[in-house]
Image 1: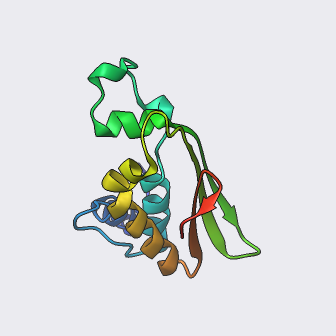
Image 2: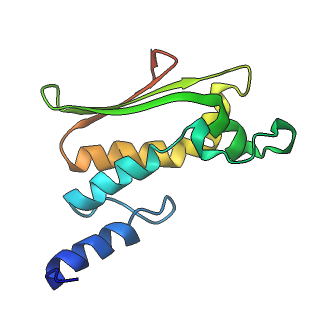
Length: 126
């Protein structure tokens, strides 16, 4: 690969520390990976669109009609803005499967000395 071992090690640490149950931000790279990975929710992730066969993950992902992760460098915050079609699932279902991911994102942002803000259907939740 031609990459110095220190850089490869940092990437491996980031990958190894982004699991919701055991991971945490240990570097700027790992914090950025956590924010990107744990914010990945959207209808496009659902391959099978037969609603009658959806599990809760499919239902929540399919209900998210718009997802946008923005960095506001002036305000020193990262904003995850979601639009959830509540006819498909209630917002509470999102938190049932994404609470650990949301908290992990909050702590990853804190590691970077920025604020994590979550907006769902234009309501600020964090």
